[in-house]
Structures are given as structure tokens and as C-alpha cells.
Length: 299
Image (spheres, helix red, strand yellow):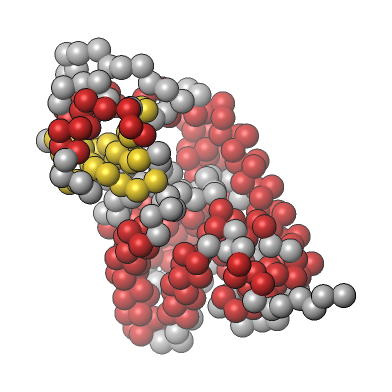
């Protein structure tokens, strides 16, 4: 019988996950500082570095896209979020941890008069406010948040391919909890995380279908160019252009192009989407004051 090598998991996991896990460990260690002043300072330092690290990883690992295998965070694109949007995304994460369903889904149900969804949102807002203002702790989550976070961060980076033993070896090296990891327990937790994600996806279908097509789909142009809209909760509106969904090529806002990976795209991109100007690409998704019909939007 061949002996299992404790590092065999590294051949199945994308190297970007190892670096993401290192950042997660740094944040966990900062959050566990006993003195409040030092804890606040170190957490802020880690969060300040995280945006730069994210951009650096997306640049260095051109084969990955800024996506999550989960639905607690809405529309993660390439551009780093503003401070206000970053807080909203942390609240998304907190709500999902507390209720095991996405916040946006609860908000849709609340609009329909769902009392349970309203109660979940009120409780989460209160607890999140307490934590933001240093009045915690709040009741613990029903799930092991540390393991769930790492599983969700790594599922689409190779964790789904690992055997139970490899998963335990991986967490033994990367997880900040400091405990011995049981293969069977981790395998079961991975299964629960996958089940939660699939359930959130199924529940969201009927709500997402109510959204205008331009908000749900992307526009596919020539030469592999893909355009997708982003309307963030802090008011930002822009369109990101990628090649086959990976690698940011350009960004277009209401004022036109704001940056390029390749300057020649200033001439190529409008033609790739069969329009004459970047303004027309923007108005495909944000048609206010639109004077020209938008091209067909594809799923």
C-alpha cells in the first residue's frame, strides 16, 4: 500500500488559495489580540493591505477570476470596493454566517412582507452595529465560521477535489484555529457548505429572474470580449470588460473609458461590441437617456 504524502493536497489546490489563506490567518490573529486598541490597529492594517493584495493576486494569477463560490456577497468584480461598499460586503458575510442564506434574498422577501426575513435583518443589523462600535461580543454562529470561510474561499480553487485526509492536511497547515483537524469532520462540513451554496442558488433563481436582463447577464462581443455591469450600493456604476471572463481589460463609467490593460483597446472595444463609442457600451446596461437601441443581451 502506497503511503500518503502529507503535501499531496498542494498539487490539487491552486497556489492563490495558499496566499489567500495566509491573509485570512493574519486577519484572524489580529482579531484575537486581547487589547482592544492593538486589536483595532492590527485589523485595520490587515484590511488596508487586503485590497492591494487582491489586486496583486489578480494580476499575478491571470487564470483566476474574482469570483466566490457562494452567494453571500453580491457581484464581485475586479475593481476594489470603496470603504462604504467594503462594509456592506462584510455585512453580507455576517448575515450569511448568522442565517445560512444570502442577505439580498432576505431583503427581497422582506419587501414581500415576510416577517421571518425582516426579523433576520433586524437582528443582524443590531449585532453588526454592536460589533462595529466595540460593544460585542454577540452570540456565536451555529457553524464553525473559520472552517466555513476557508472552505468557501477555496472550493473553486481545488478544495472540492481533495480527499478527506488531504483536506485535513491542508487545514492543518493553513487554518488559524490551532486545533487538530479531523478528516471525517472536515469532509462533512465541506458537504454542508456545498449544500448551503446550492440551496442559496436554487432559492435565488426565482428572484433573480425578476431583475431586468441587463442586470443579470453579460454582453458577449467579438474576439472573446465580455462586458458586465456593476451597480454598487454606494452608487458607483460601471462596466468591466474582460477576455472570456478572466483578466480585466478595461473599465467604462458614465464618463467613458477609465483605464486599459492594452491601450489599443480604445479603438477595438467599441467595434468588438458592434457600437461606435464607449458611451454606447455603458448605455447597454444603464440605459437612462438612451437614444440608441441596445444590442441583444446574451446569457
